[in-house]
Image (cartoon, rainbow, N blue to C red):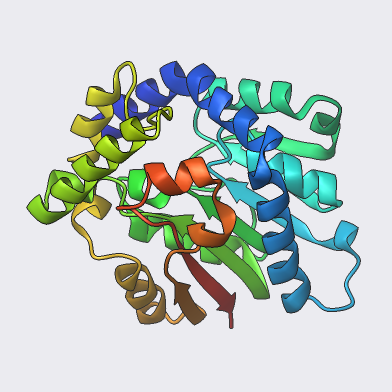
Length: 256
């Protein structure tokens, strides 16, 4: 509970700053890249379905980037985040689209939804930041309908805290970002607090996404596949330079 409250307090205070990152995504190539990729994955799983009949849960929605582009595409979107401040930022960023998104303040490890409620469960950059990722995964599978699609995007964001080789690569990224004269997404006010929090999170020491696949298969959730470095087709050039040592991966589940 202490780490949960510490973590929530951090993100409450980080909401406005993180919102600026989402605004940059909405104005950049990420909007097109993510929309195109997610549409392709969803339509492949639900051929012939009208998009407005598909219910999507965006877990850990933050300031709302993914919820916005999915609502814009025509899906029924529910966005949940444990931070009230993040929800406020998400509504502001959505503008006129905010009426097309259902916003819920709640815990990713204890979802306030019935079993088999959603066709798609989506998560981005969240599982690394959860005290009990196994519990979260069980919840996400629980609310997913049979033959539903779960898409989880994440990276080994803080593995450099526990691995000397990865720390060296992480430092090289910081030098490379500076050499290109770019904003460094890993440097900012109170970022040292997140380092301390991340050091306590179990995912920091896990080998991922292999761990995610193994766990989901161990609970017989369905068919699981993983894709390394999905950021190569989703990221902006600025993101690719910032995150070269921590590539974004995808965990895809089709619930049996």
